[in-house]
Structure formats: structure tokens, C-alpha cells
Length: 78
Image (cartoon, rainbow, N blue to C red; front, side):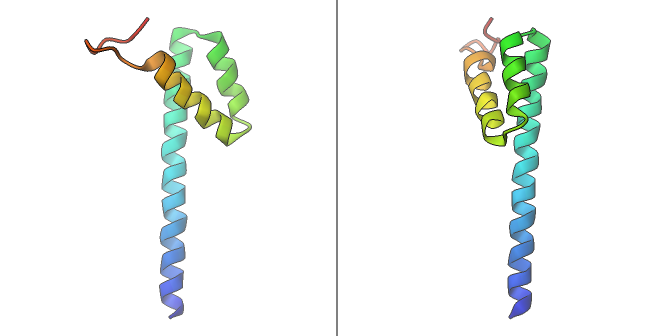
């Protein structure tokens, strides 16, 4: 019986860890894109967002939908 709970705990820890890594990679991807475009406001927001995970992810999602989103032709918006 205790082995069942141990296994569930390990799966839960690895799941949270994997989701955290994926969210960090997404944040890093958007931060690099902001650096490439030299968007000073977004860079500052991303750096402030490092200290609070929730704001960092919020800024990454906002950047994705407001700046990085592609138009119908598949080219990036300018």
C-alpha cells in the first residue's frame, strides 16, 4: 500500500518539474525574442518577472499574443 503512494508522489513531483521546465523554456524563448527586437519595455518586464514566477509567465504570454503572434500569411507582425 505504501508503494502505491510513493509512486503517485514521484509521478506528481516529476509532472510538476516537467511543467515548470516547459514554462521556463517558454519564458526564455519570449525573452530572447524581445532581446532580438530590442524591445526595452518588454525586456524590463521580463527581468522584473524573474522574481515572481506568476508575473514572469504572464508577461511571456502577453508578449506572445501581443508581439510575437503571426498574421495570416505566416510572417511576423512588425
